[in-house]
Amino acid sequence: MDHFQYQEKHLFAEECDVAELAAQYGTPLYIYSRATLERHWHAFDSAVAEHPHLICYAVKANSNLAVLNLLARMGSGFDIVSGGELARVIAAGGDPAKVVFSGVGKTPAEMKMALELGIYCFNVESLAELEILNDVAAGLGTIAPVSLRINPDVDAGTHPYISTGLKENKFGIAMDDAEAAYTRAMELPYLEVKGADCHIGSQLTEIRPFLDAMDRMLALIDRLAERGIKISHLDVGGGLGVPYDQETPPQPFEYAAALLERIGERDLKLIFEPGRAIAANAGIFVTEVLFLKENAGKNFAIVDGAMNDLIRPSLYSAWQQIVPVRQHSREPKVYDVVGPVCETGDFLGKERELTIRAGDLLAVRSSGAYGFAMSSNYNTRPRAAEIMVDGAQHYVVRERENLQQLWQGESLLP
Ligand SMILES: Cc1ncc(COP(=O)(O)O)c(C=O)c1O
Ligand SMILES: N[C@@H](CCCC[NH3+])C(=O)O
Image (tube, rainbow, N blue to C red; front, top):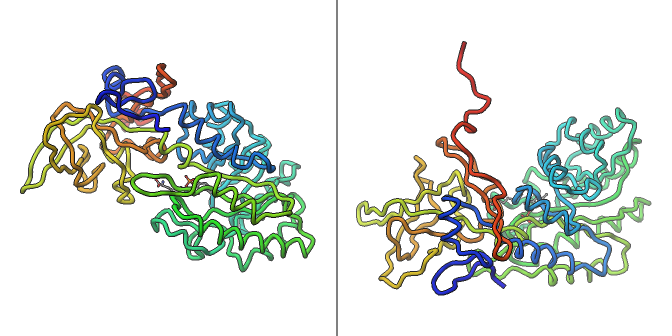
């Protein structure tokens, strides 16, 4: 069920009229639906209910404390990629014992912080990282739980910037080097080998690449077992795509069923790291049309939201649906929807058929993941406010930034 629907030509977020939220909180504005976040998380959790598992929401997709807190209350674990994300998880009431730490460049200070908090596992991405982690754990007199992120060399069939499982990518340890890396990890006294991990890319809309990766990972796990190296969990990463347009990605239950069938009798806990699949379609980005203008026969709708607020269209040429907050019956025109930032690449959508006037509101759909989380202050633009709706209730979960905050910490020369 879609929690962003029209009621008599007015767009609603659950039971809240989006235009009223925009009037109250201003634009640009992110609006998240609690019911959608909960439903998406449950879709993963219930898909593997009968099997030992941990759902570790990928914090990078949307790291607002209220989002993390909501998921923590449901029992979610978290996939983090920095000490900052770990601190957010703790601030939001998350359980460090359900945290997996991914990322190619963990610093010794971040490793120390994670060890002291007692995280579930480190997803180690290189031999060099294994050695440093062992040293950091030794310094603390503790044992670091590790899983090795293996690059299964499969083509995820997604945008090259968000494809991570090919051997030429920077991520993970090459499959050819995996056994040697496990052998080394077993030798290091302050490491405990627990798992195997892969993450082949984001916004995957086919099941095939996941299954190819799974087959390769299971074959590795079997080879390791023959050498006496027992792997107790398999972390399959995130990456399940969402419908932005006409895509029909697999549902979590289909994906999980295919994985469980392949796992068969093996004694392996399954870890998922979904980000986009939980958050993307739980959020919209609302922006006001400032002006309409025409240049050389092309129509532009200049809106108050920009690439600093929502960078996916500019960065990946990503397509996200743009809909009016109030539907009108006048003749539509075709517009490029562009922001005020001084970059030709500053657009939210191109060639969109819209019926709009200055002052109207537009909603960019599927903005709950990699929206606010990737926002910046470019052009000295304060970042948008974030609102969570829960039925007819609405809560400010991040206040709009004010100008003074933008130069906090800066100083004039003496
Ligand atoms: C290691 C890792 N896990 C999980 C995710 C979350 O991916 P997605 O948002 O596609 O589910 C990412 C981002 O692609 C990632 O790099
Ligand atoms: N930020 C990307 C996805 C990258 C995922 C992070 N590993 C997006 O908006 O699609």
